[in-house]
Every structure is written in structure tokens, then in C-alpha cells.
Amino acid sequence: MSIAAVVVVVLAAILIGAFGIRMSRTTSDFYVASRTVSPLWNASAIGGEYLSAASFLGIAGLLITYGADMLWLPVGWTGGYLVLLVLVSAPLRRSGAYTLPDFAEARLESMAVRRASSVLVVLIGWFYLMPQFQSAGLVFRTVTGAPEWAGGLVVAGVVAANVLSGGMRSITFVQAFQYWLKLTALAVPLVFMLLAWRSDGFPGLPPGDPWALPLHGREHPLYETYSLILATFLGTMGLPHVLVRFYTNPDGRAARRTTVVVLTLLGAFYLMPAIYGYLGRVYGLPATDTVVLTLPGRLVGGMGGDLLTALITAGAFAAFLSTSSGLTVSVAGVIAQDILRGGVRSFRVATILAVVVPFALAGTARSLPVATVVGLAFAVAASSFCPLLVLGIWWRRLTTVGAMSGLLLGGGLACTAVLATITGGPDTGWMGALLSQPAAWTVPISFAVMVVVSLLTPSRVPPGVARTMVRLHTPERLNVDRGDWRPRSL
Amino acid sequence: MTGKPRRVVVTSPRTAAARRPRHSLTREIDEQTRLGEVYMRSLVRTQFRLALFVCTLLACLVGGLPLLFLLVPDLRSAQLLGLPLPWVVLAGLIYPAFIAGAWLYVWQAERNERDFADLVERQ
Image 1 (cartoon, rainbow over the protein chains, first blue to last red):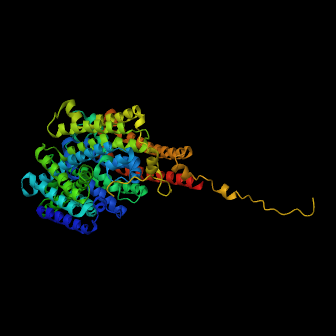
Image 2 (image 1 turned 60 degrees about the horizontal axis):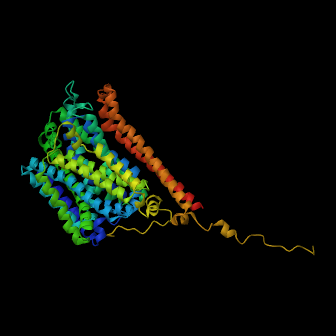
Image 3 (image 1 turned 90 degrees about the horizontal axis):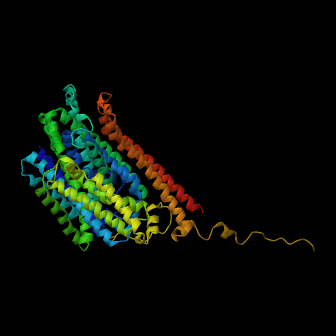
């Protein structure tokens, strides 16, 4: 039955995507959905794209392994939107940029900074896609018994086909649909499982089990908790697939409002993985990424259990497809624009590149919990794009050299830590903690380098900074000169 | 004083000019004059202060909780309505708090922008 669920989701994604084909006639349609997307659709699409396998499956698994400290993961993934709302959303929409490299170019008027940003976008996208494919393989194997690469191949293939045929217009509708599917897929089984839990007489944890207590279960809990908080709260704004969606808002005010709706949708979703984790622990399920899939069979059992498992499997595949699609569009857009020559033909080649590299990585890297690897992608975003965006929007004295040094050093250090962790670096001791949770040291380094180098090179402040500030901050209602910068491929 | 004084129109021909200054504030901003820059800087500073205020509150809440659990170990195992307190806060109450904070921010940020636009257009 779960196989049928996978087939239905995959077919639905392809069919819904096909509606968008006739919409995408010109190059700009491929990148943004012509700005005709309504706020709730847009917010649902952001939610659908953002809730990846890490949220859907990974949180519950990590909770069972490490206990209450992992509750910070969903908190940070939601709270990141509050930070994004407050520091970035409206100015970013007003900048007119629809990718991070666009923003870097608009603000710093430098092609060098643009190229550095492009490389980082591609790396973050690949780090984020890799665990999606790995976990698709894991779920597919659990459901069908197929080898682990098969599930990743299905997801990679559908995503590539969808992006190639429809562009972003179709993706917006697919994504919005996926949010509601994922919410239903966790909520309905949860209701039945809570009923089963009640009829079992509300079993709890064994007395004296320290699992539910915070600051417990890892070697350096305080450091790792703070590092996780920093990475998730500051990393959200630097994710390429999130940013692109802000361009589909008509203006800065709508961008803010969309962000609040996103925050609400995510808050509603993230109430659930914690309960899954708690029930999993109470019923003594093994701590893996598939615990969400096996829980209904254990609690409800029988035909009902099978149906609920099928529903969750559908949700999991929705998660793989939606996040991978969003990331693929952004990564392919950046590769097409900044590395290839641009235009629809390059976008097609770039789409293939964007999918094949992480698929190959998924087969070679060691298998870590999906939420851990996604957390690492957040750490890279937090130590490169967070300082670029925050300082770029609020600080006039940011210079080209300063931004470049911060991006290279902060992003470079974080990427090194990620590579060390996924290829099998030290897992224990302080070194292991510093490498597997790098944000606590790479984010401050990145900010400090950007500020100090900018202050040392005052002559390299971009000449148009005053006009850019007008563009970023004045409300749309005022008729002022906002400069004539446009994203390159519009 | 010969006869009746002639009536003269006393309205100044410059009235129209006086009503509308030669440089509107949007033009000051466009031409990046000192006055225009003062206005722009005040807008950015107002919005930045608001952002900083929300971020500080958030940092106190989010950064304070692990510290609180570290310094007051009893809180880690405290119960609220029969549920462990850290779970009630981190898996429940913190989300509505985020949403409330977000609405308050949007309300105030839009008000700041309205005030700025009114100020610029009134001149």
C-alpha cells in the first residue's frame, strides 16, 4: 500500500507540474512565477519547499537519539523566519534581487562578490540536496526493499523532469500542494496514535529516565545547543530556495506579511515531530530516520496502521520532492546565469548538473542522520550569507573587499567543517563538536572579518550605496529614484 | 492724498512658489543632498532600532533558556500540567510567542514607513 502512495505522489507532482508548462514561454518565467502568485499560495509554497525530509522524518529520529536538546532544531527552523522577517524580508524584496548573487551584485556593485556568492549558493544547495536523496533511498528501501540508490534516483529524476518542463511557475503550485499534504500526512496518523496511546492508559517514560531533560545526552551539550541555535536562526535567511520565493511577492510590505504567514504555517507543522519523537521513545522504537514511518504500525497496527503508514510515506515523498525541486531551481538558476551563458538552454544543462552532483555525493558520503546534514547546510548559510545580507542591508560602510573576505573565510571554514564531518572526521571530543556544529565559531568569524576588513578599506565602499539604501528601505508609495539596476536575466 | 486711494491687489505673485518649495523632499532624496541623506538615515535608523529590539528580545528568550536550564537544574525536571516544562516551552509555547512577536513587528514597521512617507509627502 505504501508503494501505491509513492506512485500517487509522484504522479500528482508530475501532473500538477504539467499545468505550468504552457505558462513558461520566456526566460523570466523559468526563474520566477511572473509575480502572479497570491500570498497564501506563496506562503504555502515557502512552507512546502522548506519542510524537507529533515523536518518530516529527521527531527523525530534525532529526538529519540539525543533527547530534549533536539527540540531546538524545529524551534530554530521556525525562529529563523522571525529573524529573516525582522532583518531581511522587506529590503530584500525591494532590492529586486531574486537570487543571493543578484543581491550581492546589486548592493556591492562587484562581479567578484557575485561570483563568490554563486559558488556558495551551489555548495549550500548540494549539501542540502544530498541528504534528501539519501533519505529518499532509506524510505524507499524500507517500503519496497529496493537498493538504497533507487529511491534517490526516483526523486532526482522526477525533480529534474519537473524543473525542466515547467520552470518555477509549476513549482509554485506543486510546492503549495506539498505543504498541505505534509501537514495532513503527519496530523491524521497523529490523531489515531494519540487515541491508541490513550487506550493504552497513557504510558510514560520509565521513572528516572533522563532522556526528556535538556542539556543531556551529548558530550558538550551547552556548546552544541548554542551552536545549533546560531546556525538555525541565522542560516534560514541564507538558504537559496527560500530567498527566491520572496521575489514572487509584489512588494516589500507583502513580503513581510507572507513571512508572518510562513511562520504560522511552520509553527503549526513543528508541533507534531516532537510528539512523534516522544511516542517513539515511550514505545521503545529504534532511533533512526524511519521511526516516523514505523510508529503507526506499532501503535495502531492492522489495516489502519498500513493505511496510516501509506499516508506518512506519501508525505515523506512530498517532502523529498518539494525541497529538492526548490533547491534544484535555485541551484540551476545560479549555475545557468553565472557559470554558463544564461538563457533557457543553459538552464536545462544546469538543471542536470544541479541534480547529478548531489546524487553522486549521496552514494559516496557516509550516511548521517538527515537532520544533522541539513543542519550543516544551515551552518554554511549562517556563516556566509547571513553577514552579507545583514551588513549589506543595514550598514553603509560595508566594502567590496570586506564582504568578499567574510564570504570566503566564513563560508570556507564552514564548508571545510561540513566536508570533514560528512566524509568521516572525528566524532568525539572537542574537535568532533567543533566540526559537527561549526556555527558558533564560524558565524562570529565571518561577521568580524566583514566588519574589520570593511573598516580598513574605506575607499572600497561601493559608489552607489546611497541610492541602494533608498531602494532597499523607502516604502513603495514614495516616488523616488531607486536606481536602474535590474537582475541580469529579466 | 488726492481723492480715494486706489484699491490694489495685495496677494503676492510668489504665493504659489511659497506653497510648494522648489525642492520637494523626494527630490532632496533623489539628489542625495544633505537634507535628503538626513531623512534617509533617520528612516534606516528607526527601522534598524526596531529590528534590533526584536532581535534582542529573541536572543534573551532563546539564548536565556539553555542558560536557565544550566543554572537552575530543578527547572529541567519541573512539570507543568503533568508535562515536562522544557517540552511545554520548546515544543509548544515558543511558537505562538514567535507569531505574536512577528505581528507586533510588522505592525510597527509598517507604521514607521507610513510616518516616513507622510513626512516626505507633506512637504
